[in-house]
Image 1 (cartoon, rainbow, N blue to C red):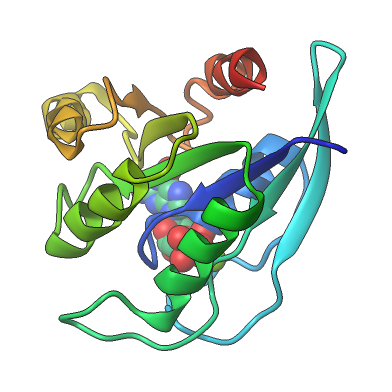
Image 2 (image 1 turned 120 degrees about the horizontal axis):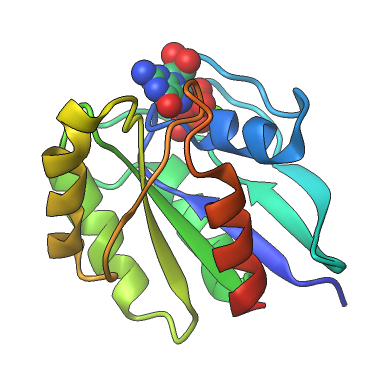
Length: 163
Ligand code: GDP
Ligand code: MG
């Protein structure tokens, strides 16, 4: 079948924005109110003659300050069951949160490539914060910004290499 690339991360880090940015069009709903129930979004992407489904499973379930939310459990379930590559997104403006650490830990049990992406690295001032994400245990983070169109081709190349 077509390789599945799951976009995983806590609410509001920019998963849906990332999907739309990579797709080059608006396929997923971007919202700064996390936790609204929505459907899983698939987008059939092509890069360097390789085809893959980009999957945004975020936006389901509810918010919970302390525990992993239903939303994240659903994302991780999809990653475990169906993904070939996981794009793990965190927010360079906010830095590492407890929820990021919990997601990172869950993803460590996966025997699949995980690509750590520091989104919202809008300008170089944020880069030290973004670089700190290597502590999440999934390698050197790739700094991207969907709003500043930073490193889109690099991200697509990395994904394609892992398929
Ligand atoms: P999701 O909950 O992880 O799917 O996050 P969304 O894609 O809905 O985005 C959450 C918020 O982050 C929205 O207000 C986006 O406009 C904003 N956002 C997404 N990407 C970037 C970025 O690269 N830089 C900045 N500054 N904001 C971003
Ligand atoms: Mg979303």
